[in-house]
Image (tube, rainbow, N blue to C red; front, side):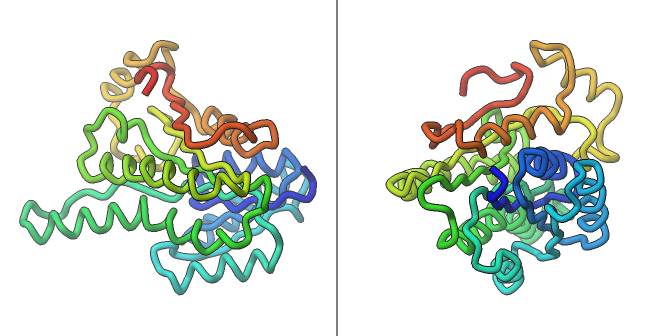
Amino acid sequence: MSQRLAVVSGGGTGIGAAVARALVEDGCSVLVVGRREEVLTAAAERIGAESGRPEAIRAVTADLTDPDQVVKVVEAVGGRPVDVVVNNAGGYHSADSDTLAGIAANWRATLDTNVLTAVLLTEALRPALRRPGGRVILVSSIAAQRGGGDAYSAAKAALHGWAYSLAAQLGPDQITVNVVSPGYVAETEFFAGRMTPEGHAQRVAATLVGRAGVPDDVAESVRYLASPAAGYVTGQVLGVNGGSVLGR
């Protein structure tokens, strides 16, 4: 796997950083992509040092909702075949108001952050995907399957439908497309400042294994789907939620 190239969006913190570290450890060269240069650079330096492969990871600062900035990623790839694209960029937006204008702005921001980022990055890199053997992985959320997140749930569910279509389009080239759908994962920015002890306990109690997830739980699932071992797995949604949602 030493010649493989992976691109991980939202790779500066939490799940994205854990995914990047796992792929570097597997011998991949990794580009971590995100909006915050300092956060990305710090993550790349830390992962490079911890893995003993500082040359294997680079940071690319780009707002993936902006087509003009997505081009930065293509330029960083530099004509190499891309083996793995992990679309992890996303986030939750709170509505500023309950007016129709406020609702519209919240939905647009949520769809841009969680769906458009994945679409633009994947389409920009689509010509470069290794044929055969490329991997496209979308990081969704348990909210797509059980609801409760309003615009966020709808945006993450949209990734599932798009993944099915993309899997059919890319399947003849033996490129796989899959979704990883995490449940409650502590130690991430997603819940920073929003999680109470009561909320934490409630979410843990909803699992069958009696604990919160950690970023490495998701990273290990991505690691498998990104590997040559998963060549016969495509068009699937892999729930990584401790059993809080079963079989869908």
